[in-house]
Length: 390
Image (cartoon, rainbow, N blue to C red; front, side):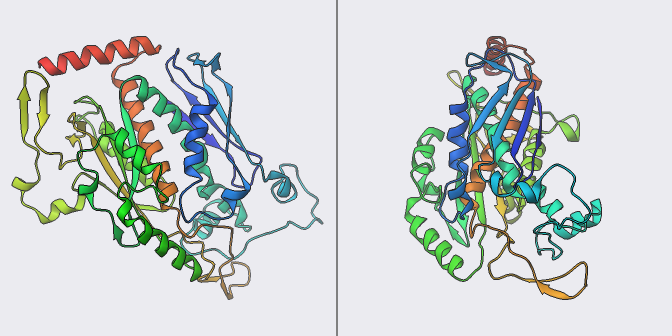
């Protein structure tokens, strides 16, 4: 499978085209809109989430609630576009016309200056409109389609916030719980956390950070349950599934690190406390005594839950702006301010969940090639039987 997104932050719409989905898969706009709503929630979100209520329109590839096998096109319209038509209009303007809301002061931590250099833009709005995290809206929509495919294959996925500004969850709170049980807790929590005992500390810190005109980051975790062993490959670097997932998580705006299982803690432990011992039973087949490696060995799944975490830096758009330099005058200035959040870690957890869902779903399509959902389900079931008896 593959997809392409298009659109600018304050443009008329965001668009995605998905190619390679199997036919006969149930799909409706409501299935996607539920996930888009989650992305707009979470304590610490800014005013834009109050202005726009993102909903998707499916304009191709689906008939009577089921995929056709042809490309699926998703559109998320910008409800605030009416206020930006003169600023972001498509049509040419006269040389004498003033271009409104030009930006010549790049913001530290953003793509503004580097992007302006790369593409030759003197008005840095041309950069920030596409580099904005607004684009993740349509990536969540694409991931929601992938999640629907995974659900048809008996695979569940959930995300949660595990740290905000140094306040960490206690993993023992949710250890042993299923993805479904964790999701029920997370969806009721203000910061999408599976350990409600730290929620108030996190929300208080977010509020305090906002009052100070600052921003705050954190860590998110994605868990995938039900993946068979042997998905991915060890034969070449670009076929390793954990590498693809790591790349997808790192592609999310403001993400600066990824780890699986114990992650960087492995550097502090001997091998005897890291590697997962192999067990076998007639009822279950092969399984692991632990899951320190986060569901991967040699770029392939082990059959244990996939556990991946990503760290998000504090959002660089501050209401207490940092120093910058005007690219026209070269004089020092405080960086310009665009509407922003004080903390978007809960929303980022939703984005992470959906980019991981896409990579996992795509890996299954690659391994069990099928143009229709019933055939894909049958191929997967045959492989599960084979794996258990291996």
